[in-house]
Image (cartoon, rainbow, N blue to C red; front, top):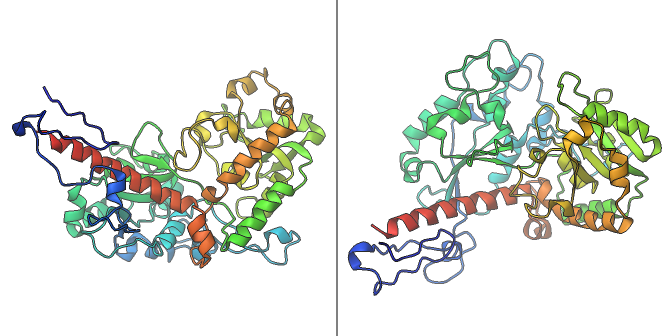
Length: 456
């Protein structure tokens, strides 16, 4: 019977006087996260436990895909404007009638996360050129862009996923095999379902097979929406239109969020989904119309919202609460638009945020920054949104907005060329929190492995 208690989250105590020597193999590997980020000599190393190696993939896996932006991947999709400015897209015109959006605002496409993330990783302060010294490994494959042909054309072909696996096996043998891929991660800048076509499925099925390739089963997939039951999926925020380059810019925006006069109780922005019978968007649209002067409505089927943040945020800034029903899938970028606008999100399904963004949003007491209304109550007509939200006092709304303000830095992707030490060191943005989460996950895995090797 073993007499040592093993935990991957605490120091492993080995008492040789209590356990027979034949049962114990002392490991010299670190046993706590603190030990992982401290050198053996006791001198603090700011990059200990945080070094990431980014594979130098052949261009066909990333930048060469961008060269086909002009309707060469999909005949009716020209994403050349969206890949500009590190994937932020075109800047909002400084001549706009809304001067609030004249600095650090872009027409960012929701699916440019792979480009954005790679640009930030190239400037990551603990990026290492040594595979043997790395604590984690980043695979800069533009999976979502590569998937466009499989998602939006009739002439679907296999994506580069299998070729990526072959390249890793041929060129990264030691690092790839060291932990079976558990210390590797990639960005798949769409929902996980877009990369989860069954291997035996035909091309008539939606998506690519990337996340079902057995060789990639252990890597962490950072996606816009995860399959919550799979531990290797992790959702990270959709990119929005605000990418501050200075702490002053971020401060100016949050001051505006705190002081703006919000004359509407709630707002709903988005397009209706009449083809999705389970959607409650139509019901919420009708409730908004009935609320007349207490609801602000932006119909994105009539106004192009996806690459112009001005009409969206102009509406969100005027409301206390913002409705966040499910769309084509459970999540939507509007959740993060809402947070950045200081408009308290109202969720109708737990998969829209609560079960998704555990590295970026609070996992306990979500009612501190949001409201939850059961979807079924909207479907059967038993719940009137205006009555629910109207019951919140001004002081309670103020408290919730204060909590929401705290989430703004971690919900956006700052400009990669920022040289503002206050912004880059004091505020942890969505990229920083994603890296923090990944490194902690890798450290936990290594600690767990250490624990299992202590006893023989």
